[in-house]
Length: 174
Image 1 (cartoon, rainbow, N blue to C red):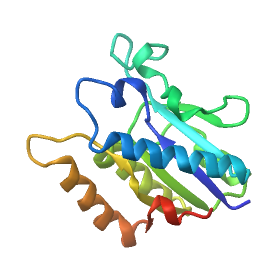
Image 2: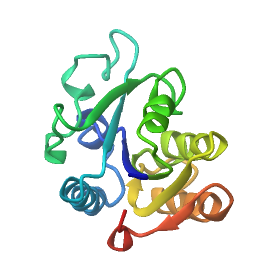
Image 3: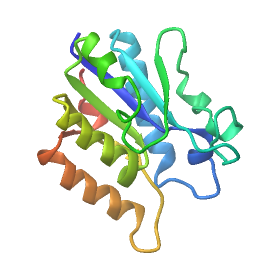
């Protein structure tokens, strides 16, 4: 086993919050396809949720903090964990879990492109993993400066090559 799927911050409050993610339904469908494929091929899935401070909308245990039920993840077989920083490796045992499972290829999907996807993709490369950025399976929201589409395209171009290999969800074979 050398591949794993890493789902980042696909949480109720981020996905269904007041600001809608760019092309969210298509991105979610692509992630669901990858989850089904991973389950069928017995590829491990790691799903992380961002945990905000007590009293924040994504504080541990809050309804908005929960992973999307539409992902149909199984806590008995999938690896679910929490983080408090954009980099999913920071302050977690993700690297140790991946090393113990002999994972090399790490397929990254989820939210938000310019924060947690970017930070985790760069960190994975720095830690010696082989990150694959699934170009049509990550998203974010518009900002006052840039549209979400521009942010996604920029990160696909910037991360793809220097930090990760870029692939579309339909081409993933694990």
